[in-house]
Length: 458
Image 1: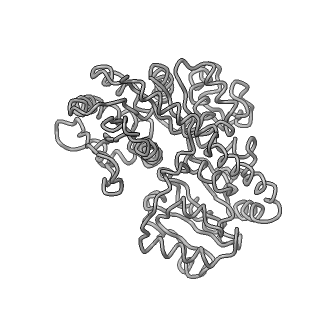
Image 2: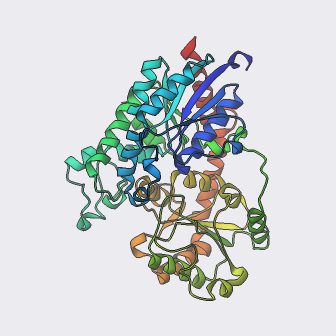
Image 3: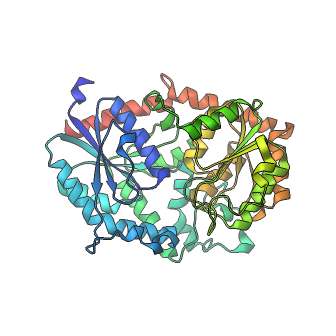
């Protein structure tokens, strides 16, 4: 441990919650093994450093000479995600190069840069200029990465753009996915999406190593496929959040206490926890169908409705008068929860989720069955694996999400029909625990990763 003192790792996350959280978890893992960590973060969505006292944060200013951050202007909120990522990369390319050079020039030995895969070319050139080795963190699963990497090929084979008549057709190049499962998103710049995919692959292959928040047993076939094609070392050391150094004491705020107290009053495995992540939004009509479906299922539910989730409507304004009062103690609607704590609570019996990779891993680790309603990109791939490969969830497609279908699916998961799924969930929970234990695959890969990073300046 002592030999690593004074050795720094610089990290560069993408400024979205689903990307920042695993980067922070990885930072804790590195810190626990004696490295100091500096996080370079865009001025856009800059986090509160007070929440992360173990690390040093540096702000990367935007490059707009006019002074106003183009990513916070009114039109940015309505921009499609592909266009937004393009603008993000353009806005911070030169400021990142300058910030990295300044950080390296501070004198402390820098072992490497760990950057989010989406940044890629921005970080590759900058790292080469200052002579720092670059590793890549990929925040999606191995299976979804394989599918995303295949997008240019699938376009050439006419699977893309997706045709409604082919939605249920099997994609033989990336089984078990169907056409409707391909990791695409609505965008006015489809060619840019393919360029991002190509850039991620080339950037990963030109790096000094790729870190994955997954574990061998969960995605063994995808890992074998990627390993056979990869030119660089691969380190599947997940689930990040379950490493001992990521289990931290927390101080609860008032809202968390209220939520925990409500959960404590519910029967074991009786509550449906509902959350669709930090980016997805829905129409008011969809919101109302979800609300009535939850209500009519007669199952206790904890529903996270974050501000901005319903397009064009303030928080719960769309609900009929008296709806919240009518559900009483049967349901609870909140703006935010500590998801890790909620999924670990004995009262939670199912998780209705958008199938983001972080949420998927967290649910697997707690043995909680999933109801899958993916919204975009890798979420479709994750949902297919949850339902058909790992057999730990049931599908509830967004296009079929009326109140009667919602009620039917929720009841089926929470009754005896869901017992087989629940049994598989407990098996995967145990497998995840084993991989993190002494001699487990993730533990072994972590030791290899630490040795790999230390070798950079030897």
